[in-house]
Image (cartoon, rainbow, N blue to C red; front, side, top):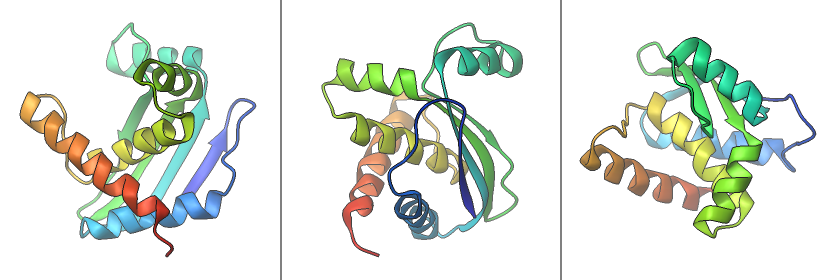
Length: 139
């Protein structure tokens, strides 16, 4: 089950549509959706998590905690809505598209995709694009 939590004045317009899409992404990768929580927060909250758990003192758009067991995907995905907004402006894309990209990015990590090397990053970007297109397909 995919759950959405909000720690600021923000909410997805159609949570069911997002949950259905993310479940289809997971299934398309031959995995099973388990318990996944998306927590939407601000930069300060994510910076605190980044410092505490990753020992990084930088702003980021997403931090994910992976609890996957075998093919059953579980995890907590924290997203800074502020950072996503700023990145959307910087990349000259609309906010909704950038938000979906970040949301699917977390799930793709749980499915085994990495983005540390240039080759891994290229594959991750291709997978993000592929899975974002699934959002517009009626289930």
